[in-house]
Image (cartoon, rainbow, N blue to C red; front, top):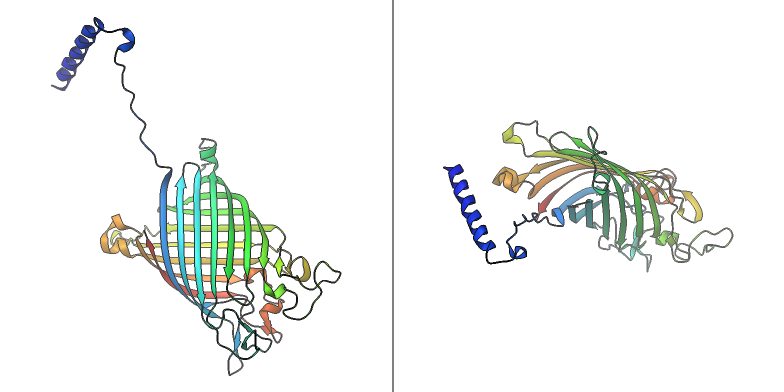
Length: 367
C-alpha cells in the first residue's frame, strides 16, 4: 500500500507539472525545497550553581591569636558562598567562579590586626579589640579552546586523551582586612583532557602564571616602621604596598567520576578533586629584596558528593541538589615559606597560619 501511494502521488505531481508548463515560464517553476539545518544554540551546555559551605579550620597568613594557656590558634572558621558558571560552545569551554568567604573573629576585618604579642588589637588605638570577621571576594575565570574543534579534526583524541586545548584565564580578589590584600593574576598555557570511566574526566594544565598586581599593607612604608621606600638603595618597603611578582609556572589539575560500579539503587555518589601548584614568584615584597617565596600547593584531593535530588526525584533531576564533604590542603599559602616567613612565625615557631588543612562540607544547587 505504501509503494502504491508513493506511485500515485508522484504521478499526480508529474501531471500538475506538465500542465503548469503550458502556462508559466521555466524560471517560475517550483523548485525542490531545501531542508533547513537544525538550529543549534550558541552555548551547547550551560550549568549555573550556587554553593554554601562551612570550613571549620581555614587559615589566613599572619592572622592568629594566643590562647590563655599560651598555645597559638592559627585557624579561623569560614562560611563560603559561591556562584559557579560553566558552559560549552563550538570551540571550547568557559568556567567562572565567584566566592565570598566570611571569617570568624580570629581573622578580623579592618581596623583590627594581630600584633607582635599575638593579641588581636585595634590598629587605631593599639588596645585589645574584637572586630567582625574579615570578608574576602575571590573570582576565577578559565577559558579553553579545543584543538580538535579549532582545526576540525580528531587528531588530538588518542586513546584516553580526549582533547588538547589552549587555556587562558585570570584570578582576582579583594578583602576588607587591615592588610587589604588585593590580587590580580593571569594564566595561559595548555590543557590536556582525558576520559575516565563512568562518564568521568581528568584535566591537567601546565600554565604560565603572572601575579602582576598584589597589594598588601604588610609591604607598605610607614605602617610597621619608617622603612626605606623602593627604588632607593637598600629599600625595605613600597610606598603604597603595591607588589608586582615575577612570572612563574603553574600546574592545575581536576577530575570527576561517578561511582558507576555501585549497584543501580546506590548510584547517587561521585568523587571529584582538584590541585594547583605555583612556582616561586620572587620576594614577599617583590621587587623589594625580602624573604623569597616558595612553591605553593592549593588542593582539594577528594570530594565525595551525594546527588540528593536524583535520589529523591529520579535521574531527570540529577545534580540539582548535591550534598558533599571534602578534604582541603593548602601548603605555603600565597607562596609564603611556612618555615621562614615572618608572617608564618611567632616567637621563632610556627603560628599555624600558613598551611591549611581541614575537612569541610556544603550543599550545591543547580538552577
